Image (cartoon, rainbow, N blue to C red):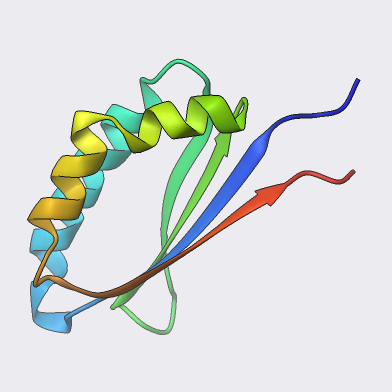
Length: 98
């Protein structure tokens, strides 16, 4: 049986003066996402050398579960409320090979 687990890595670059505002939004997103059915891991990491660069690491049971997450209120709230606070977000979805 193939592993259908989906891994998501998101590079988030923020405006330096908005660090505390973004952290509050990210904390809400992380805490709410960890409670979702099918979430295996959801962690937020800060670059040791750049305090405007966050890396979000997520693991989901399947692409269907991930799609449900993408439609959640807390996900959409983060997208809307982070406008003007975030320079860019780059997201990569991966499948586990081994």
